[in-house]
Length: 114
Length: 114
Image (cartoon, rainbow over all chains, first blue to last red; front, side):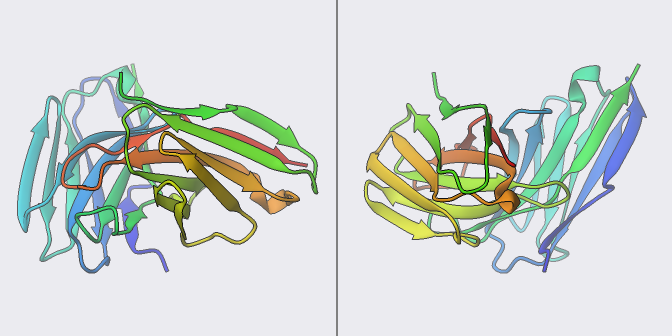
């Protein structure tokens, strides 16, 4: 059973537009949540990690929120660039140490067009 | 330069052949992982290694084994590869504390079993 659901599955935006990616999960316990960017044919690169019950982070044009009560996270990308074209993956960790497991979503494929 | 390196990047094998995927990291991380990524699915954990000769099965270990004789090197072995093991394999490493973004992935090995 999939414990991390991402939506939309794919998204096309024009360069300069903003977009929002969603992540809903049922993982328990939910120690932390990460967003990764995966360029085509490449590995995953961490964008941000959220830890608190209600958390917000910002990393340049990327900002993210986490609501553990709702088991929901969003990733906002502001003023998209062509280089933002990638798959964005939500990952929930059930512990704060390597003894825990990471639960991966299938990703949202973002395509930015000129 | 913090890096996880996977070799080879691409591999084609025939069913029944043995396969060796190699992974190295230069950060002295204790914990290393092998995942596979299939279309429409999140990454699935095959094996986790907590240090030299300290390996544990992940969620889908059947058909795979691993070897960790040095902290910086973690190998995934497929004895008698099967066509359903065609996938992209990712290696990752992390320090014991997961409370930050220090989780690094390699670029992946695309394995095709014919």
